[in-house]
Amino acid sequence: MPLEIIRADITTLHVDAIVNAANETLLGGGGVDGAIHRAAGPQLLAECRTLGGCKTGEAKLTRGYHLPAKYVIHTVGPVWQGGGCGEEALLTAAYRNSLLLAEEHHCESVAFPLISAGVYGYPKAQAIRVAVNTISAFLTDHELRVLLVIFDRAAFQISEQLFAGVQAYIDQHYVDAHTDDRSLQLRRMERYAAAKRPAFDQAPSCCEEAAPYAAPFPGTCGQSAAEGSESDLQHLLQQLDEGFADMLFRKIDEKGMKDSDCYKRANVDRKLFSKIRSNPQYRPSKATALAFAVALELSPEETAELLQKAGYALSHASKFDVIVEYFILHRNYNIFEINEALFAFDQKLLGA
Ligand code: AR6
Image 1: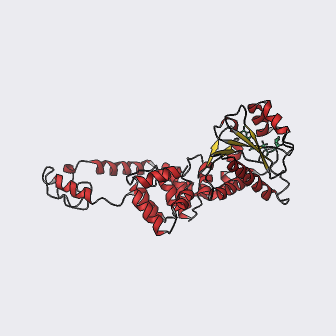
Image 2 (image 1 turned 60 degrees about the horizontal axis):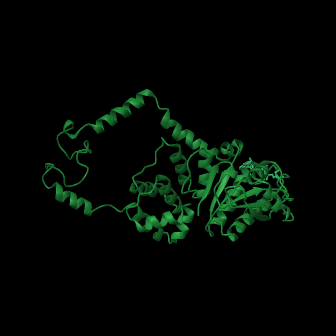
Image 3 (image 1 turned 135 degrees about the vertical axis):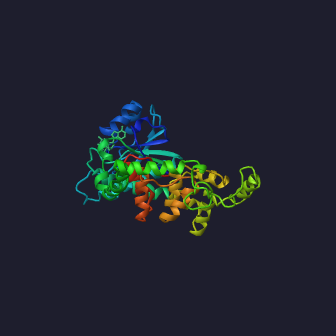
């Protein structure tokens, strides 16, 4: 099931459970803890008093009271002391124990803040990395929708350090595509206008290479529009290329993958995958098509082919496309890492 990274105030989310970055007393505090207690009302503190605190790395559950979420899972992250005091293991445990508790209470959706990344001083970039790695590892064999909620701007301005390579690639490709000089633009416009000109405006022979737009399909040379057009059309319709869904399932088989491995690695919901399974004509969004290309670890050429079957192409005029292309070219098929980069650059995410 998918992991989504969103920017929001966690107290407003309509999910089964929100996670509170609490302290060991569980009696409230500042930051997200204070916000959750304010929004839930005094009954939350009353229930917390009955819990006897919570050790760092562990998690406890209460009701959500006035919150839109049904439950609050209180966990305690480590205080950052330089990284040599087991902070990463403790932070991992805080996420994992919260996820296990959510599952135990049959939650279908749970939202996390960036635990320890505020008052407790965990470096934000590292805190995001631990969160994403722990949650994505958990989701490979559990059905749960998880939101990682980023609140402050500083937390997602991690891009330059974490994704220096991505930034360089964007600069090289995306920026180039947007800053070419006037003469190049004019030449492109001319080419475009020539391609759009109607066929009778072009050279008379309909089969020469210079006039590709006049005869895109075989068997149409020298015929009037009326002549044979119906049977030609029928013939063409009987010879449709392999569609998106067909190629997707062929690749899954070729890679010896299980369906569930594929949609999990694509960060795609099981219901959406079933829809594609049951409808061979299904046309996915570009983000979904690319998510499957990543899950299947397709080469750049195969990715282009799969996209084309869904009616898309990668474009250097799109930052989203350039970022995904960068990862595919570097054979980095970790969808959560790609989504981290997309998020850092303010783009929509793959899959979910
Ligand atoms: N929604 C989502 N995220 C938020 C919100 C919100 N409403 N408010 C803050 N954050 P912190 P910690 C983010 O300090 O570092 C408390 O006093 C915030 O930007 O709340 O684990 C407890 O009682 C940051 O990225 O938690 C403990 O004593 C993240 O939530 C101590 O702080 C965590 O920041 C725990 O410190």
